[in-house]
Length: 335
Image (cartoon, rainbow, N blue to C red; front, side, top):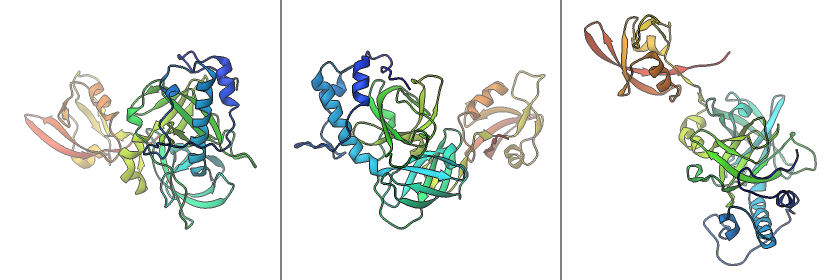
């Protein structure tokens, strides 16, 4: 792809070309370090854009340090006929990747380390709403790993580093590095101008201290539309993912009455979450977890922020009576 400037920050074409050509040879600093084990960020990372050759050299030196730190933990994963990327985040071999890469739990995984070493693993749980997934290395050993960072604190314009296997695993080519900026930081997605292509999916996005802040998920129509799953999403679902749970959008299992403006149930789907909880046709849903519901659209909007397996309290009017029912939401699966 053609070199491009960082969107909205005035980084000139010559700068981008220089950064793409940066040498990844080892580099060292002396003096103070941060909790990340690296020196404090150079002043250039606080600027809107580099302004001189010293700034470029400082960026180059920082990239060298971060790459040296994170490269051993960046891996290629092959599952069936497909492949993607991932990053090891614990000494015992837990790997963060994209949900569409890992797929269902319990599948065997062929893992290639950055140095070419071949090891084995197995898929764990995945969140199919945000596209997060986990893999566990099954070979015995202590594995190189990196720390998970705080994705919630990221601000627009911060520098970041994308690592992965664009185009898939290639012999004698280590994971590829791309430098860019945070363009948007939302609850369920981070957008950057770090160019991604097929094979990068599941690879790590790092801050400039070498901490994982997101995982590559998908790309858009332009080089500035690169989307990543925030690290916080993995933290939120951690217990469920390591227990091999597959998380889907929430499904209640009721059909609306089109002849009324409120949230009156016309039909309850057999064996659905609603049916198991005791909801009935002609019930009028008034609240879900104390949130008022005035229409069926209100119900859908609230359910869009829930996940399969969540327990909610549904308050309904049944004839002249009010009832409160506990519902464990089901899974809305496609296909």
